[in-house]
Image (tube, rainbow, N blue to C red; front, side, top):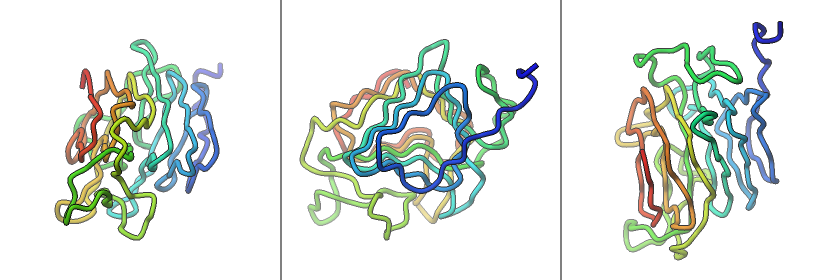
Length: 210
């Protein structure tokens, strides 16, 4: 009976630079920070489970949507898209995690960066998002496009994340930096996270049902 055999995860690391789809029959394991770059779109099917490996400080795992790229994560109420820890025994088709609310800081989180206006130091239109090392170009956010579109995030659950990089420098459950109003973010939950559940740096996106 295949239902009793845990699915062998698809290990993902580094950059995703072309259009990619993650399907609900698999588990995707973030081995590092994974950056969606180069204008690529990452599509995640309803019901898909993504698990981050353990990594502390600057080595925390995360999924980062860089400026100009998109995430199309349209879950449903019956089939949410779940981001969780590799320590979570949840399998495809399941919704309930095997960890508890005390299991925080088990991986990083989801970071979405866009080209919408921000309020940065010295009047800069661009800044580096917290939680991403300063020498990583994919950590830049902010611009002049208020209607920028970073994709769709619906019925998404982010669990057991959060990572402290330094004082006042953390990966949150979901971090939005300079995300524009063309982006749709609604019906999201953040469970058992170390730092902020949702942290928004500038931008123009309207977030609904958090």
